[in-house]
Image 1: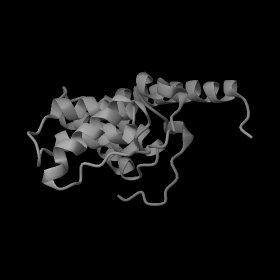
Image 2: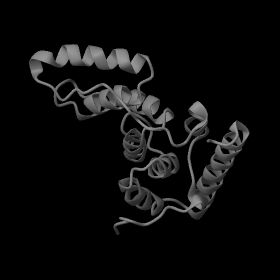
Image 3: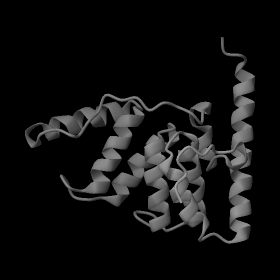
Length: 174
């Protein structure tokens, strides 16, 4: 079932405490200066530039490196490295990284399969604007027990309440 245009309600909010607490924001734009979509002659330099940007916390660079190692078309595929970079980008609110991370948790790629964790990460991705994460979360939800789904919604609710508390503490934005 496609969710195009369907609004996500605040009742099924976010994820995993470390992800939501990072930078005190759930909605962090992912801007970047890194691209590994380059000719082979420039790939080594592009990787180096992306690694520099990633080391400085650039969410897009972290995502690009994660995708590079996940795909493994121009290097040796490494789910462990992809997982690391996707986790780091996810902590910064990068929605596509959260989508990939959620899929990796669900499939057990580079990590022990964990449908509950996958569901939470995918919901976070959707909150951060990755609409296709809604469909992925639905597929994962079908595999969860009722108790697991209840727990996931409680975790997401707690994280969102913490986020809202932080927003309110920062005062009005003018």
